[in-house]
Length: 439
Image (tube, rainbow, N blue to C red; front, side):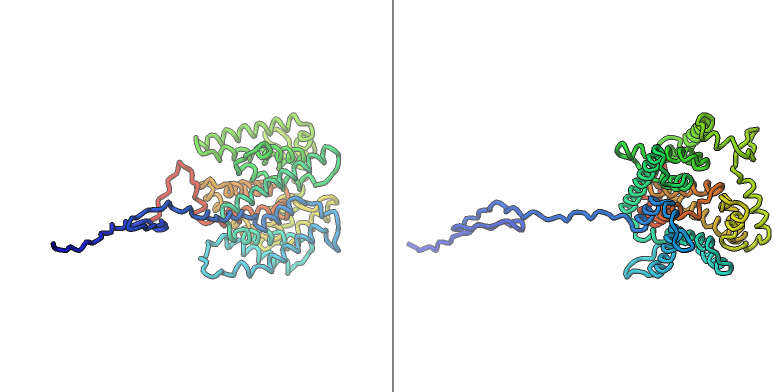
């Protein structure tokens, strides 16, 4: 009998996924149940912080003109704060010029004409120094450099947080003013409150609201503006409600905006003719302006404008020096120190050169922000656009561009809008418009 060698054949081990346990017992292959991996620790997302420039703007907007009641040497506390902020901004200019390692150079957000205007106004101040001129140039510095600082490191999350902070600032300021008005306590100057609230109103209109208070915020802020009895600000505030329709994504927005604007103007007319305090402000007084047989009270502005124009004719090209318009008005009136028209102020103080540089630069900013708002539904662009339109209109009759509590929040909004990268700025496009794909 021939002896045969018996060979034990082991079954092939199937390939198992990584992490599966093999248990081999006497040649048999057993696949154990997969072990449960330890729970992965996912770090919580870091909540975007409000930019420091926006926090500073909110603080200035909350104070408005309250510090002006106290003096710090030859200037008011408000002027001292303005000067300190302007000096700090100038000292931090190297931070704007510094380029981080590995960072790509971003777009230039500041029109060169505004930079030239800032240098030109500073030069005119050195040639003819004055306290009023120093304060005015400080506000210009806050606005122009504030745009540059606000544009640094902008993300959509930080922009939305900034808008929320400014909108809540508008709600708080308005409620405080209305409450003080009801109790007869004076906290804010009415005109200063109204002009500041216009900037804060832009955020309430632009940002989609959730919750009762936020939905009512545009009406709360508008009520405070109208209650201030500021005629220009009241008309502008009611007119800005047309942007509610412009923000819609559907329908003929231009036609709806025209209809809404018409309704708003009718509302202004009814408000003026039926609300006694506003009626007195509009229709009683010097009656220097005549529109279709209706005489409008200008509160002496026509005299101020004529006086400013006559004085500006003495040096029409380079102007009479920073702060000279305020000195002119103060020398002839006891309770008035401004020409109540910022374009005339620029012409008087800095001549045709200064006026052209500022208007050109402001128009360039308005165009850039407007193009971004037209191609995107990002609320930051709309808020900046609405605020710039409000300031451009208010400058025709008020002292808006020398108020730090107006121009610093405006600069922060414009900087946030222009600081967003182009891809992010157009991330929520109007569905009616097609954008060519980038290859």
